[in-house]
Image 1 (cartoon, rainbow, N blue to C red):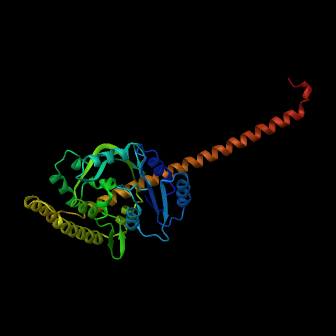
Image 2: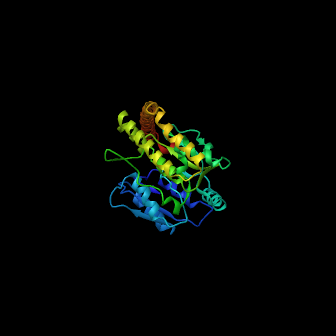
Image 3: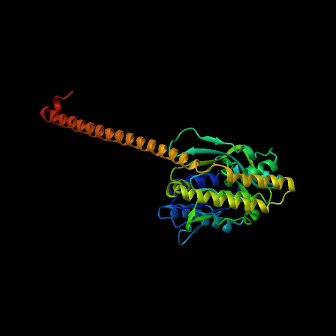
Length: 333
């Protein structure tokens, strides 16, 4: 669990780990020099349960490096990342994934349907079934999805359960642009590289919760970079996918089909998704601002009503006191 200023949702995430029916696990928390109550929460959990190991970085390493840090600190055969604002939806999350990996040695990463909650618009969660990589899919076809840009929602499988020895063989350094770390599409090179070592599948059961927030690192990237920056990032990612595809070991026919996909990425429109995403993000924030305004208005009304009620209670008490002073106690009924 790589964390930074995670006090709001951290307890929920950790409790979802402790409730697992598979008890043979370690929870490694790498704190990226948080400035809120994250440290005290983690230390309290570590004192409570010896399976929890808390590590605090002396300085903020950045998102990608902290994700890499927990992989290096981990010791188990299997590994999964858990974002501090996500949680396991079922006590059987670990046991179901480990069981599948034990039964299918050719699988290097096993994920599941993600139950996504929108933090900006709370309500019924949206279950994202990763259809292209369900267990029954032909891997020769399923693998192609990891080399397409833009990638379908199979990127959620990043938060599945890995064979840790295989995960250590793929690049985890993250992306850079103009000397700045980039969170957007950081899962692409990890998942595409993983395809070189075995199958990636997703179980159909919704065993994991994910929280969608408009303040995520990827959303911040969308806002801080210009269209030209996004063009450059997209071009770099396409080149990266070509390089990884060239290293995939496969029969000639499959290899040619894979290369056709990565080369075809250069002919697809890409900038269109940025303004669409930005417009949706702006609309969500407008709606959130309106909700906050209504809440503030209702809160002010409640405060005023409370003051008026208190004033009337004081008036009643005063009148009662005056009545008591005028009427002798013996004459009261």
